[in-house]
Image (cartoon, helix red, strand yellow):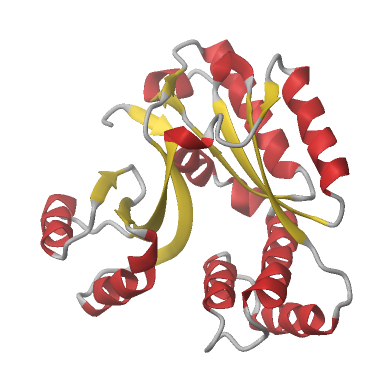
Length: 246
């Protein structure tokens, strides 16, 4: 949507990942732990979930020795982290889906509930927010000097949807096709920055006032900063002119 920004794009362009690299490495390590424990062992050749976790770690420039250490530690660990998805509403009625990795779902759920209620939101039951999101594979492609030509080529390669942003081209595919399409794009000369499974909103909540937008972004950043939280998805949509005022 021209002139508008969704949260994943906002977060990427603000460089929050670089600003909190240590915390991101911690989350990536937890993701590797879960992949090893629930995805089929420590061999990425036979564990697709682990391959995806390693790919995300590489994109974030996590050193290879850190990745290997995380895999080995997960294989030996007795503690099993549980994947839990929470749904709720934040300021301005925005919907949020929070994916967490925890050894105590009741504690994590209560903490997230408190965070939502603190800003006038609420925790919701399963499906209350998820109905507005579709599971997708997201491939981030670097833009060259002719993005229009790139997008035409991407369409010819059979991707589902394309969104151009200031810093990249977001390519959406069916989740089961993520790996094969990524390989196809790389083989066709595209620079693939990352590939991951996401939840994409179908209908968005437009925030048009700077003060309200700042409150929303602060809330989402606080969710992201929670130790147990792996990913946050939301349907917030903030016009670029509003972002420029924050």
